[in-house]
Image 1 (cartoon, rainbow, N blue to C red):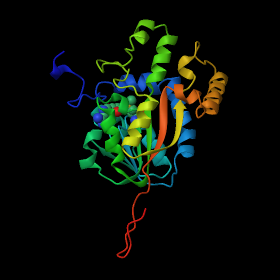
Image 2 (cartoon, helix red, strand yellow):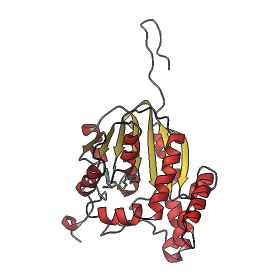
Image 3 (tube, rainbow, N blue to C red):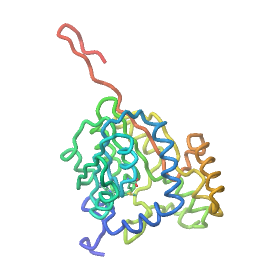
Image 4 (cartoon, rainbow, N blue to C red):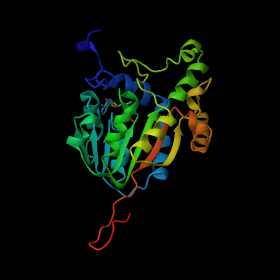
Length: 274
Ligand SMILES: C[S@@+](CC[C@H](N)C(=O)[O-])C[C@H]1O[C@@H](n2cnc3c(N)ncnc32)[C@H](O)[C@@H]1O
């Protein structure tokens, strides 16, 4: 495939142009998407201190998260480089307080420098060629005391589900990531908790809370078919999503990362103190 045909952006990221239908159908059109939203609906108020502050939603996709925040009184700025995703989100979010920016995360210093007291970046880093510097870019947009709700696709869970499905050669070769080609929805940079712990420390962020999103669902031998089974599964997911060791095998890892209050107060006759 020539570079001109590649679906990857010049930075090597997989913007979701050409993937909106597939993404809408295979994630949000299925039980796994419903479960993700049901868990976020319970987790976000527990993991974040929310008081209607403006939200920067980076890689906002089809706009489900923006809708959740806008409905709770947060003015939202949704940044999304894929026109197809942005236009669907715009249609979904009509009547809500949402501003749309056509830009990739890497352009945030120019288009939405902040400082922001609340940023969300869900299921985006795993689609980037350089997720580590992307996290630094997000961290630099946070105000002192500001919170980043970060959700990433979990590489350890991807290995586990490959083994469960019998893809033993793939797991043995540790060939887990996708290439971002065609209509494939296997992320190009699945991430580990160890990476998030190390990279957050590098950019001065503290991990305040962590949860696994879908700690059981993706390993089921039989899908939960009845409403009663789906409810029981949700109850189990909710009960264990923040417990060790279960959260570690969530399909997604959800973090609250906080930029510490480091502003120093300086008076003329005093040394700065924190
Ligand atoms: C899996 S979707 C997640 C969408 C949404 N955040 C959600 O949780 O449903 C990944 C999104 O990241 C966007 N994306 C890819 N590369 C990006 C970049 N460099 N900057 C910002 N968004 C990007 C894609 O276009 C896509 O809409």
